[in-house]
Length: 159
Image 1 (tube, rainbow, N blue to C red):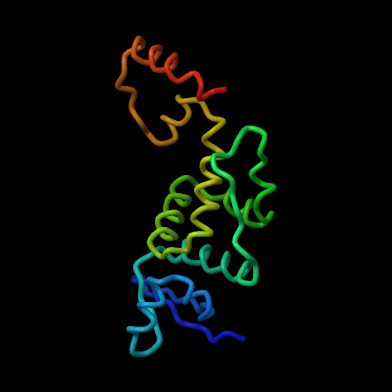
Image 2 (cartoon, rainbow, N blue to C red):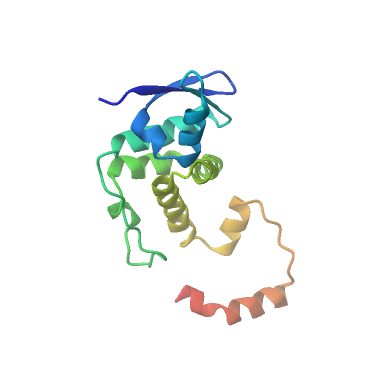
């Protein structure tokens, strides 16, 4: 049984995480090694950290999943990952997915970052430009002629 390490957020919320999971992150390993009392204080949202650590707890004895990029239209993303992980990612808002990607990237938890990015890419690949612009709150700054020309130049993207 692994020993548990106390993780405290700046909002003073605590998580107790297996040491083996902490040591997978070079950033957290360094913070742990520098800690005098074995406690790590970090500035990430508690709910995002819960997702990260629960994912690694559930998969700590499994090998890393290979996700083919780019996903093609015939691939079924949910067949590549665990059903619970797929359901968890589907429930997250775009903002929470972005926070999860940023947290995983910063802490160098690459497996979850890759899965979350693939999930987001899978959603976006079937959306039209207007829906993506709305989702990310991107204003249209091109004329109709410019848009038509760009669409013609890049029609291969929709093949």
